Image (cartoon, rainbow, N blue to C red; front, side, top):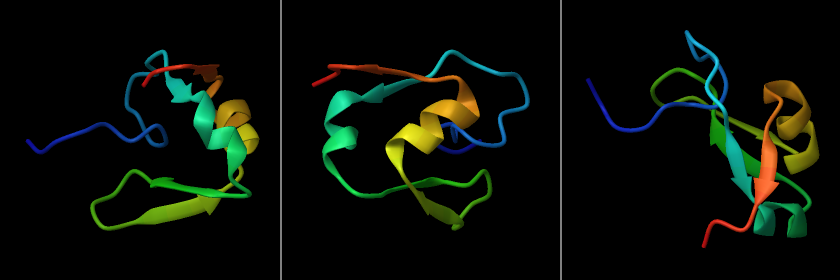
Length: 58
């Protein structure tokens, strides 16, 4: 079993928080649920897809 859990492709939906600084960029890259596969999208679109919340994490 390897490192982190992708926000996309979770077997069981986990509560996901996105650092609020992600909103400062036109797009971000996140793991797409498979090793070596990433997807580029807007932070707001990611939040909608995963029902995520923005928070100050750092």
